[in-house]
Length: 110
Length: 116
Image (cartoon, rainbow over all chains, first blue to last red; front, side):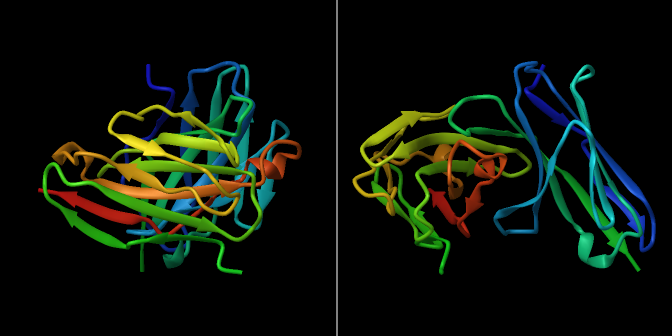
């Protein structure tokens, strides 16, 4: 089983749609969880951290279920500018090393 | 404040050649990392450093070397380039442990390397 697995995608959605990304991780000792965004041919950038209590940032909501080793990202009211690849990222070592999923591509169309 | 800068942006190497990918950060971060990203794949950690003079191997270190003589610079050396090293290379830095925010990594724009 891969360390971090994500929906293969791509997801094609119209503007205004709600879309959910799922991610599972295999290492139960994982400590920190993130969603990064990567635009085409650009570097990854932190979108949001994921906390056990769940957290929201505008149209974005992230959830963590430690028992199921599952992370999710919900995007409401999709915009054209949300088109990107969303990377699920997990940290479980003491030196801030991150393990990246392959990413799920989102394409938002008019 | 430039953040993380990488040079060159693009490079074509012949098999067997060597080169150094440069990475510099101006955020006074202790932790620095090198990743490679192959098409359709996630980022793989090559090497990382927790401070000047300290480096350690990541998931895919073979064929690469690093050094960290200053806080700011973390060059990646490719010796005897092979086609399997064709990839996009990202350098990143982070403040390090302590606060949760310390785990955020800031990435450079990447170097696209082709080995033919």
